[in-house]
Structures are given as structure tokens and as C-alpha cells.
Length: 233
Ligand code: C5P
Image (tube, rainbow, N blue to C red; front, side):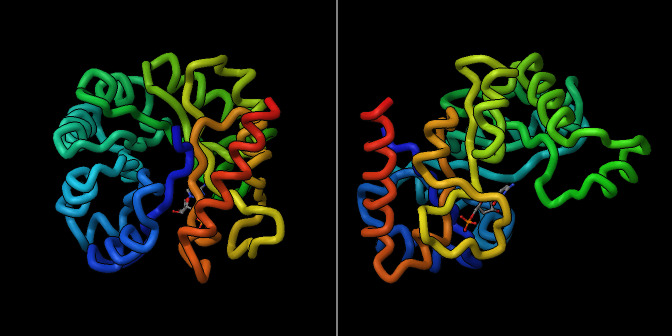
């Protein structure tokens, strides 16, 4: 099974499908985030599904339980396979989301945004932050107990998180850079092989593939690296 999810971080449906066409049949799992969803609408997701692609809808839901439940129903109807929500929305919000999902939809919790600094977290939660990792682990367990299917996490934290949550809970990791690739604005990166070794189930890999001269060749190279890692395991 292909574990690489390609984010469609583009401003229009047309741009998205140019990329999907360039990547070809082998690339079959795409992430649709706020920008494309807001500009291109749910039709982008429907079209991807109609083309036989799998869709990770990265909308990071965070609202009252009833509103989140209705949004989860809508995402299930669209045919998305993964959908994000904020664990900090709390157990009742997550339980309502879990109860509302249907079909193949799986829910992924976002724990602590990687952009947040400890001092920002201290200001938001009005308490001293001794370890960001402890908060990530606590929120991951809260999500698991609410019945959420997995989390989005750094590949560098994946093996630690796996120890906290045990097997069977999906770990999806962005911030992946093949050896030698441009880091762009990512600070803490792991290679595809490291991510798989650390227990990631899916890898979100954008610019190293989408900005390559030959995106489908870059995608194939990443797949080969992952397969090598899997065959050594
Ligand atoms: O191009 P790149 O590989 O950096 O893209 C990574 C994707 O993963 C982007 O869509 C980005 O928004 C998303 N993401 C991330 N870091 C997080 C959460 C999501 O890079 N902590």
C-alpha cells in the first residue's frame, strides 16, 4: 500500500489537477487543505474521488460538538478517507466526531501546532509549559480514548508517540525531506526512511515532490526509499 500523501498546496482546482495529472496513476493519495478547499470547494474532493484518488481533508475542525459532528458527516458524504480535528477541542467534541463518521472516514487529531512556541502555549493555557512533548502525548492519549483513529505528528516524535499510544493508532507525519532536499520552511525534518522506521503509517510529502523538475520521478524515488526501509524491517 502507498503511504505517501501529497498535499495539494495550490490556489485552484485547475492547478491541483495539473499536478495530479503530472504525478500520474502511482500517486493516489492527496491532502486538501484550507486554501484549496476554500477556493476550489468540495467539488475538488469529489473529482479526486471520482478519479480513484484517496483524500485527506485537512480542515482541522475545532468547534462545539454538534457543529463538528455535522462537518464530519459532510466529509464522510464527500468520500474523504482522513479528516483532521484539534484534540484541544476536548473529549466530547472528539467523541461527537467519532460517532458522526461513516464509510471509510478516519479521524486524525492535531495535538500541538508545531508553529507554537512554549511561551505562546504558556500564554494560551495560562500555565508553565515544562515539556511540549508531554502535552503532545497527553493530547494524543485523550484523542485515542475518545475513539479518534490517529494523529498528525512529527516523524522525529513518532517512535515516542507509538510507545504512548500502542499499535493500531495511525501516525501521519509531515516535515519529510529526502536526504539532500531543500528544507524550505521546515525546521525539524526526517527522511522518508527515518519516518517509516520511527513507526509512521503515512508520510505527507509536498515540495520535495511537487516542486521537483520531474514530480513523478521524485515520487517514485521516495517510494523506492520507503520500500527499501520496509524490506529491511
Ligand atoms: O511541502 P511540505 O512537504 O513542507 O508540505 C508539508 C505539508 O504538511 C503542508 O501541507 C503543511 O501544511 C502540512 N503540515 C506541516 N507541518 C505540520 C502540520 C501540517 O508541514 N505540523
